[in-house]
Amino acid sequence: MNTCIVGLQWGDEGKGKVVDILAEKADIVVRYSGGANAGHTVVVGDAKFALHLLPSGSIRPDTICVITNGVVLDPECITGEIDGLAEKGISLKGRLFISGNAHLVLDYHKAEDQLRENALGKDKIGTTIRGIGPCYADKVGRSFALRAADLKDLDTLKEKLNRIVNYKNKVFGVIYNADALSAENIFEKCKAYSQKLTPFITDTTKYLHNAIEQGKSILYEGAQGTLLDLDHGTFPFVTSSNSSSLGMSAGAGVPAKMVDKFIGVAKAYSTRVGAGPFPTEQDNDIGQYIRERGHEYGTTTGRPRRCGWFDAVVVRYSATIGGIDSIALMHLDTIAGLKELKICRAYKINGAECTFFPSDIKVLEKAACVYETVPGWDEGLSEITKFEDLPQNARDYVELVGKFTGTPVSIIGVGPKRSQTIFR
Image 1 (cartoon, rainbow, N blue to C red):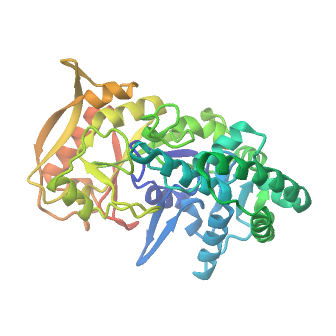
Image 2: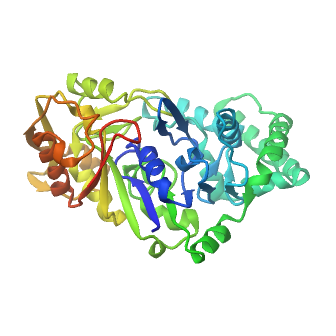
């Protein structure tokens, strides 16, 4: 079976754990979008792995890992992750394939990201400063773009870098009065990246279609979340790629009809990092309780995440546009101990209830949440392995999530470890 895993909120839903678990029965795990702004956490026993570019399946020693053309590749980050796993006895030799068409994130992209956010001041988007947006902008602009395949031809790469950095320095100097970057220094870094990454670079589209013909089981791993999708999220407070399941086909070069099942991942509450609308946010003791219980600090940035009640309008929308078959509801254990819980089942807009997520951010900012309030539970869930053994109030909560989102819950997370997962 071929499966796609995608986030249904604003990212950080727990996709890494879900992918790692399902990778046990997959031949290949594919990362198809985003860049090092993603943060997927995998816990194996007492070991914790924080991955930004490598597919979450890379922790399993026999799983093939593919990074496709839809990803913007930070060569410093990916080489660091490869070396980091090697130090822990996990080798990617012969089982990591990187698309030659994946665009490279280099120093001038990160510099531009920082300069732009600083210039915006209080109106900044709240990016991770990883250079993702500027790299995607260069990809669309074409003239100043570099791809992984360019690492194979250092002479031509040097010529391109001199031209690109010269242009970037002029722009940064005029607009931001910034110091000039050194093309030579960036090239020296690229020489080291070339030596490490060239053995992994290939035509991943061809590889995946050959694997499909051979009947291989493929797991597609999304990054970020649907509400951060460039076209379908809370624009402009979004990422720079199609982070919903709609980006899978373009990002991997594989038609959606070749995927048997789409699983959406959501937390039992809501979080987001950075600026942007967040209807169910609880900037109070409830939000702080969730933040501390769920360790809600960014894997990539370390920033505290904004926390709030579960928003069924958001998740219903994400499931609808993404063709989601079932939901993996993570962090159910985090909300234990609260006397009562709330689920936003609708928005009230201009006096009328609405259950479809509004596309106009100005309308969203004025929306009032219509909550369903239910009793909570005090029991710990971390040792429970069967749905029937959950406290009745926890079971009722899960059923309400399925009801208000219109999508059944098939997987429940009750802790960070692989074993702390309930399958229905």
